[in-house]
Length: 378
Image (tube, rainbow, N blue to C red; front, top):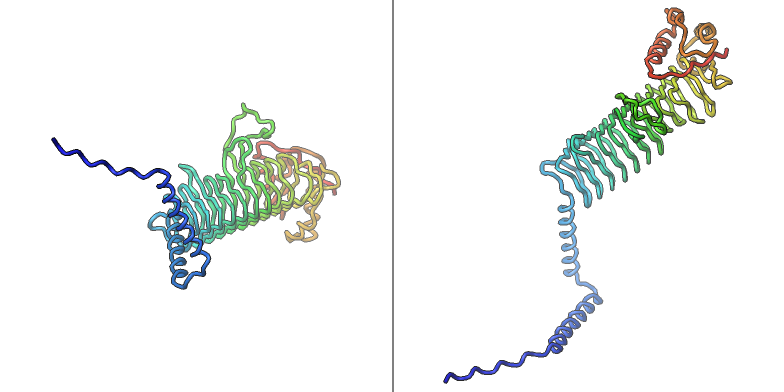
């Protein structure tokens, strides 16, 4: 008969195994605490610093996600840059920056921490050379910025926006806000300034106000346009047109038109579809109800106007020129009317203000809706 197999050794009890593991963990903890209490040697300190540096380099390399071939000067920590981003030269990018979509960025740009540059498929963002996008600012949608623009803290640029060179968007202003639909884009010239908290609305392409939207009205392609060298310190309504060298210190309603060198100082909001001729001035706290022709200001009544001597002096008008313009307004603007009488076009022929008046008449006549022209107050 085959010999019986030797009996197996008895297995150790579970409690004995747990006790052995617990003793080993206690010994490791005691060694770790003892090591932490004593000061580190120079070799151990150098080793720890080197390990920490290698870990930080590895984390930054993983977080950058920079496409191959991109030429950059500096990229911060935990940035996300999509494959559609193209840099045309060295740039500086801070921490936690996000870029996604078809984006082209010029040389010398700087993006501070937490900035966001996004656009959807079919859209494109183009940022010129030497631009600065500051902390927590956001560029979203179809946006074009020229060279040397500055976008400050918490600014929102919501496309479609087409802006020229050397524009300044001060903190927390919002360009391109929507108000029940959009049918066009915001256009901005060069060397414009947008103050704190300013809102510029996208065009709606409708004459009805946003609060009483007419769904049956067919929208038309429109634009919210701002010319060169404009100072904007108050919000601008949708479908407004601001020509060159204007100053805006009070909120403008929808469909406002300001011709070149006109100024609106602080005070109550103007009325929709207001039209201001070249060199006009709405003084501080003045109430204006009707359209103003060139080189005038609001009279003692909101429906009247008088000559603006400051604007005439800036325009280089002599005393005889002032009398000539005064005679014209006395003859043709002695009462409220929708537009200047037909004889006015013949009366301005050969006058020093012929070009100013022709532009005022023609542009205002082409408006989809106009207000009454103010009455002259000698």
